[in-house]
Image 1 (cartoon, rainbow over the protein chains, first blue to last red):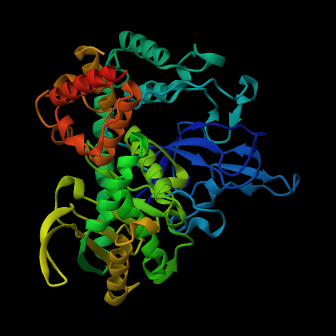
Image 2: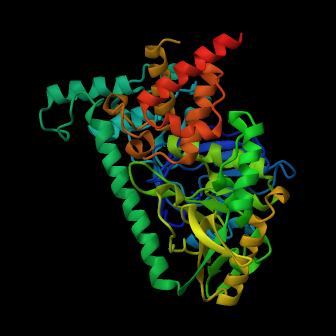
Length: 428
Length: 87
């Protein structure tokens, strides 16, 4: 079970997309995992053949639990090699999980709202092979929606006859059994509402909300307890950047327009590439530089809470690529469909509260990262430059950094680089 | 599109971007960004969705003219008329 977030301690395996014998390659999505914040598609970073699935669908297991074994193609008869998903054998692996495998899963968390409409995909496991799994003995085909309904209704899935493809259990099957049980043994099982539809999502949303709050609380507590933050701020003249942006957007079709927030993210990625002391993790009393710039983007969820998935290799993306990546990331975060690689340890995070109209943000670092960059709203302000007073669009950039890993001097240079890059937007 | 169709199209775009909102609770005259707590990225996604449905290119400077549901419908209706006149 990958650590899909610094604040994740366990996860529920909702669905396997592969079966023993399947060939997989880097980037394949092999499973769907539910953290408390989100449903995350787990990708694989090795090539080989799935040997054994060790965790049954529906099982909640701690981070670090081996989910499956895969056999590398090269040594077909060799010893099984753990999937990268299994690599995170301890909590420390959450950080530069890239030791063995590339970026492995960091945090994932779900919008606290009703479950997403789940598309039932035809089961890929032939019924005959669905046989046994070490943990739960019996393997059932259950749609995630049905599993949730069963949880809420207190129905044992083993007692539910499936009517779906290959005998898969559907939500209707669960509700049928729940209704029947409720009739026969009043009070035997938890008094489940016979119709799960309306009340269930609300309850689940509330549960998720509570779980997410708890996860954020734990992480922030750790951050403020362990990290000696220092804070810097710099007001930056955005006239050149915004003029360039507006001029670009005039010529672009709607779908290719750029937002100033993308510009700011791009600039941070490039600046931090030049200041590696701010890009990475503080682990076991020492700084571990990130292997690349994976830019965490704090995305707030309307129902409360936030998720900070990463744009991988953000410093190597053009502005257009970054804009597309962020747009896609925001949309999928809202829909609760992120991938494990996006949740894999961002090396630095940016929070932009400008849309909410505040002037600046003094951020709390996402441990074990060592820096968090904040932007406030771009506002027109009186601005003195070259002996003249004028009105300019100004943004306040802030840096919260871990004083164990860097000093104010480094942080100051970093903010200055951001300012300089914003004066040359055409180079992004 | 009739005004009714425009309204339905905008609401669909909104609920796509913000699946948790209940379109029946939207105050047609209140600021959409404020009441739905959407950010600039969400807003852009809504504009893109509208563009896909109507082929209307809304320039950036006109974004403020789509601040409420009522305003947005009026703006798109007028844009449609202009579009038709050009053909």
